Structure formats: C-alpha cells, structure tokens
Image (cartoon, rainbow, N blue to C red):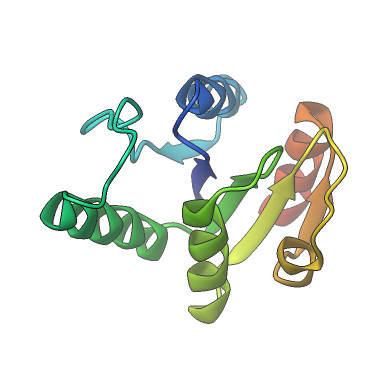
Length: 131
C-alpha cells in the first residue's frame, strides 16, 4: 500500500508534510516522497512561471497515480491540495483528509473516504485500510 501525503507547501507547510511522512515511515508504511525532488515553497508568485507550474503539477499528479492512498492535510486552504483530492477521487484512489481545525468547506469532506483529526487517528485509519 503506497501512501502520498499532500498539503500546502508555502509558509512552512512543507515541514508538516515531512513530519507526517516521517511518522508514517516509522510506523512501517510505504510513503511516496513527492517533495524530495525540489522545494518550491519560497516561490510567492507563479504567474510568470508557467513552465515550472506545469512541471510541478505533472510531477505531483504522476505520484498520485502511483499511490493507493492520498493523505491530504487540510488545516488551511490550498488550491493544490483541493485539486489533488479531486484528481485522486477521479482515478479511484482512497482519500483521507486530516485537519486539527474546523473544516468550513463541504468540498474536501465530500471527496474523502475518511475524515480524521490527528496523527493517532491517521495511523488507525491506515491500519484499517491495510487489512
């Protein structure tokens, strides 16, 4: 079972993704690391970076195709995470959304298979899907 962790990259979001990736690896899960190839979190405006944007999107969608489960960290809004959730469901992937905060939008809820609040629930949900 291959797992990809998606989340907002900007404003230290990348460290949250890495933290969850590390936790899952420690627990014995096979984690796809889509961010090891590059960190674009410091880019504040992609309007003049169309080629780079296309490359990043293709890269991320290819990793979602390779995964079995998408764990989406949705503590804050992200265009990218929303698109990744939608794409994952469109190609019949399991989607687990995790947020320690309230989720004021119905969209991620509607496109998820599991809704969890913290790391402990994440491990339990993944173990359940594994069996």
